[in-house]
Image (cartoon, rainbow, N blue to C red):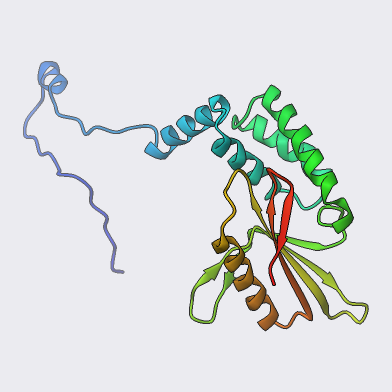
Length: 200
């Protein structure tokens, strides 16, 4: 049977016996017992905990919203952030109160009530191979079992309003319409100021 051999480094050859002094001077390859990526993660966690910048705050809020499907999951999502070291307990409580207020403001829309089947940050593969990744796609089934409607939401925290945000949502709406949904609506939720814009 043919063998596949993986070789790494340069083999050292020796003849005769080696004294203790000679052995102590043999060159050894340098190995690290950590991955560089782990050090980066530790640095990022420290930045998240210590930073009070609106950008970092918005990033944490966005991540938490992207991890829940209904309001009942909020406590667990925040607890996971605290347990992973992304935020501390004090900040977690503050973020929880802020997010509860935000969720209450859209409760009548049913976005976080369990009314919809939710897909968070799911990739949509386009015919040409491109990808789209809406923050939140919410699907409601029709009584006949068909796909009745879809609502798409992109969250924005601390970002200035931009026409490109609406263009992006419009692209999502077009894509989901081509997939056969009867009704597709798209929204930009500027959560920092509570404004919701609908794509037309």
